[in-house]
Image (cartoon, rainbow, N blue to C red; front, side):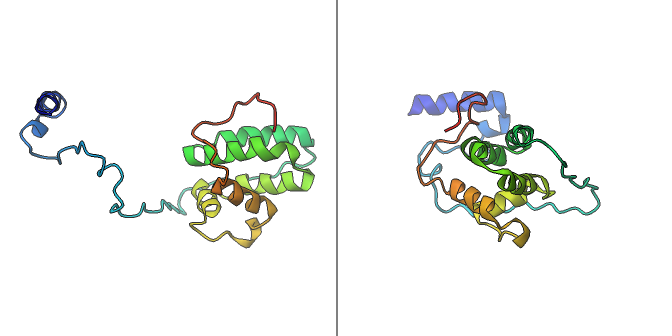
Length: 166
């Protein structure tokens, strides 16, 4: 233990000299209690609704062939710009998109493209915020069920793009 502490002090001097003398920051805990503490405050919601930033309105594509629409939605489900939705929507699309009919595909298109804030989709799907009536439909119910992950699937990576659909 003493050897590890000495090594920590050496590293601290190189990384941040104030740590070596015990000034400026807290000591890093080596116990497991710090990693699994239930005393942490809840994570605050990120809701940056700035009306001064112009966001272009989504224009639905008319007369788009169903297979082309599904390909576009698969891509858009994977490239969200935030990891949480990228993982949730890409795994959802890999599991359900191939079996959706035209009406369901249109609902999914509206769900992932009409809201201007991706955090809204995340909060609706996880139940942190109530889903607005315009998005509260069978696709949102399927997504909420997918988010519950009752089968305890590992979803730390996006699914293989070229894998066969289940």
